[in-house]
Length: 282
Image (cartoon, rainbow, N blue to C red; front, side, top):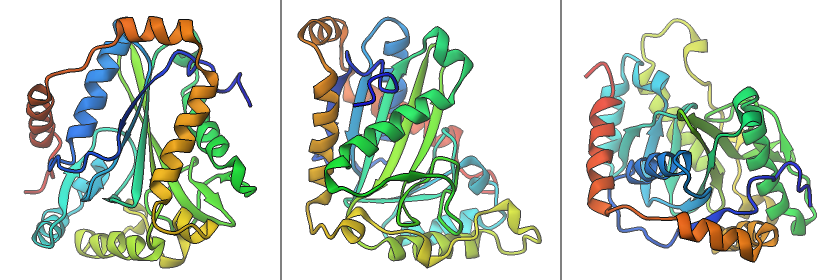
């Protein structure tokens, strides 16, 4: 176990909301992450937040400024998707029940102030260790043609299954992973590509948006031969890795400092985020 890379997770609490699918607003978990981050920065515990959403497209800020973004979003909403803009880095990511989202909410330390990559490495190592039992190597590095491309694309055999983004507060860092656990990676890539084809109409510079191809992305179910339930299996493996680092003393101290918000407060914050970060060309 690479404990040096995972330092800071030994006193981490786990908030597993992966089975709570009734919350309609896709920004609710992002607003909850913000709240937990403020608490962590004020002396509260580090938290691993696990969650899913039944049907959404999460846009990055650059996506929201594309000339046809409003029309493309309107079409997706007509098809039943909740389209929102997140304030962390990255580009468009589709969510459904086959995508497991993992947020690591970490109070800033003197070391994390100087090198943001340390927190990306924590997430990469956590996911790699959770998949260690499969015997497959998890690589990092941008995958050409993948949606939401970046240096911390995680892949197996050249096919992306996970992207990582980061949100930095004054006294905490929120690292978010979107893990394609079940279903078709190609179908999700087609969905994102269709959004860009509409949203980027009239753009002369292709570097202004990702050029998504179908053969770039796969789910862990497809890559590892797992059937339905891969998201649940991965959830338990992530919890196992974190649990192997925890101590009774650390958990007791973290639990004493922990608190949860009123869900209505989080919903109100999510509505505020929706208005603040919504598509700029509406």
